Image 1 (cartoon, rainbow over the protein chains, first blue to last red):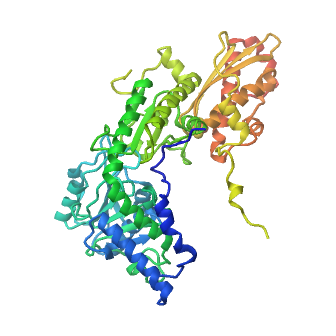
Image 2 (cartoon, each protein chain N blue to C red):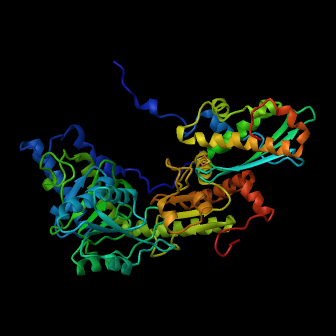
Image 3 (cartoon, rainbow over the protein chains, first blue to last red):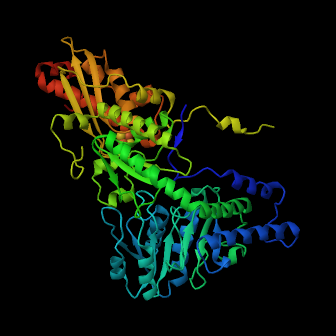
Length: 404
Length: 151
Ligand code: FES
């Protein structure tokens, strides 16, 4: 049976070279990087090698600025809470956007319950943050500006360098959540003026179990996990050496192959959207049109008059792995936050499907996905009382411009 | 000593629902409309915004001779409506009014806790269709008088 994986935003396969590179670090070289014997020193060398790989990929001024955590979510928690705790004597105000990943949004919400305050600047209908809105939200109390580089749901690429410039002018710590961007989009922490920036290697063909936080030398940060003095005392806990080794190599490979991977993805992305929009009526694209303002892997669509979980399950039955931001898919029965804050009609949010391409998807796979998806939509519409009401003229399409 | 072998978690197929639910989702029974339905119920779920419509054909002796559904909703909602139509077919109005969401869930072999509300929608849609029938046929109200249903 055909299997097409189009959920690379949630995770990617570990590259064979990366897997190979990790192997010796399980049973052969198993030392604790804090130990002073040969095994320990070897582990420490591996850590430093990986720090260099990440450091070079994101143009960090020095490898010491790379901190390892257990995952991207932990890196985001450390950036947000760590800044808040370190700088609370200066002020308690945080600026973020309404479309942040839950690891940022919920960290800020947690701090608000502890007496911090936050301003969430709105994004527009394509998910863009206006840097001037950030400037306008700054108060003398502001200690952190936190935004994402590319949106995890709709792929919007934010003007991070402009936001970083504003943060620099006001001497405010600036955190960039690059968990969905690293490995795909070019990252230069110096040009972005980023004080902190997070990465997630399992999203670019590295292993799970490691996250990375870049911390500029000048950035102030409190540890949120206490114990030994690993990671310069910013993150206690024995380092996951196999994952760190694998992540570093995955980062280096992603950077070396980035242009080849991305130019291919752009072609696949356009082909997928062209196919879907030609084969399916009443379907809309959420987020910017494919191009330089959109993450090359992401295609987020809504098909009208049907619900997303059913589409996802039928895709799965056809061997196609996708995601959905529909309320029926989420455990709290709420549509994805991003779809809500861009103002998408609630029934369109329910008909949501997120395709995220990977470097190994093929043209044949895209053709298969387009033809299968068209059948799936047709099948669910036959079952839908809303489609029937629409056909009878009792309700109208809510897609702006009412495309064919 | 027993080990948890990798093969144990390498099933042929993975689905979020049990095989009965998957079967009713993939091969829904009684999907569609009834040309000359005697009762139609359409309800919406407050929880997630979904819609379910059930149409019933009721014979003179007060038995449900046919049922159809249309659903805008998740896999469990589709499976629940499919199962609900199966459950009420052949039943009298009185019997059908007693069909609960729990009966639907049990017949489906269980639903995940977060999906129970989808089966509630199925119960409500059946009740709404029966209410509609009784409104259209007030003379049949006596048939269900014994039932303390709030028609
Ligand atoms: S219909 Fe929305 S969760 Fe089942």
